[in-house]
Image (tube, rainbow, N blue to C red; front, side, top):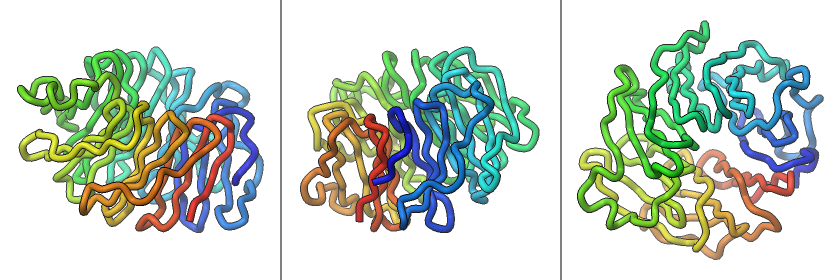
Length: 298
């Protein structure tokens, strides 16, 4: 158990060298050594202006963390120094999710202002957007493995939407598919998104279930139900064999994606799980909770 944050933990990013970075409602980012469970260095702060940090994402080269905060600012942090190296403004409300393109040249951000923006990671210029996603709040954003598409998930106008990452054209809207709304009629909120590494499938939370979409047909090919409460977050192992899903009933379920069956019993926590990260091929799972603690599972 990693203890230090004073409020709920919203994000976890795995770094090279057996380290993780976490972000929290306490307004800090923190660097941890996974093996010892101890914090490395001081809290990462931005002169007290940060507020709640909702999302973090590590650049493909492992040198930079992007963060999204309640103040609507996207920040870039130098991993080794723990210092802010860039601030991008434009969103009018909190930034709920950030994501790097696979080549590390772009950062996508999603906000509760309903907008999607894509930034040039080098100079902070807007490359795409703001795109009005149609979601009232955009909770999740994720680049496809080939960088050609961006998936968004949101609330109120719920479900998944997929965009051309170069033009911003809407490629898919969940409630357009004739039979989809019947299959997923409980969808009011999509918080978590994860692409399978070949880009042929997209995994998305759908209120109390997790849905696997086939990109070629934009049809759901599997629905994983392990909880009766909203699914807050998902994470895929690097080999795409294991999926972890966290629900707001204080549980995390593990799934075998070769069979789409649940692995063992849910992992129980004392408070709601906000975010999860499977490390490598899934041998280690990191979960972070409303109680401010971070847990490492073998």
